[in-house]
Figure 1 (cartoon, protein in one colour):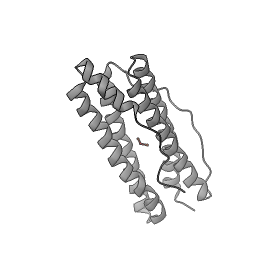
Figure 2 (spheres, rainbow, N blue to C red; figure 1 turned 180 degrees about the horizontal axis):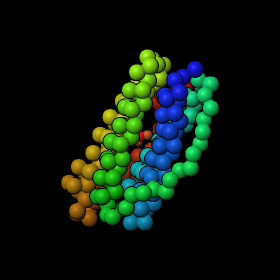
Figure 3 (spheres, rainbow, N blue to C red; figure 1 turned 135 degrees about the horizontal axis):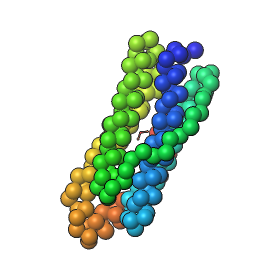
Amino acid sequence: MLDAKVVKLLNQQVNKEFYSAYLYLDFSNYYYDQELNGFGNWYRIQAQEERDHAMLFLQYLQNNGEKVELEAISKPAVELKDNKTVLEEGLKHERYVTSLIHTIYEAAYAVKDFRTMQFLDWFVKEQGEEENNADGLIKKFELYGNDPRSLYMLDSEMAARVYTAPSLVL
Ligand code: FEO
């Protein structure tokens, strides 16, 4: 049996990760509407990864005999003003998700729940990568986003991203 507070936070994270998927699908739709199909592809794959994260939290709870409560997923609440703002909102969101993972980690640490801490280790590392990717996209956009030909090349690079299943298997 896991600690009740840890379970509650893990359960909330299922919803937060599905929300992330929903948010990135919104980003993806935005870019497809701008004919930046490479960016659209990149965020559609990001949405798939977020759904995977949600399923990993769900599976972890089930593996530990805990009941999973599915809550309503909120409408994406970010104003998508222009091509660069979307990327900045992505970084802001990833930093927020990192803080959520750390909060769960702290709760697990407080009750010496080493199993959950070990499970979360993958997410701690993943968040480092996600923040780095989001930051990298902003930097690339600052370098290449204002010149149409460079933007076309960057968009083509983004189109090459393919989905890979998460390395964490439960
Ligand atoms: Fe599931 Fe992008 O963090």
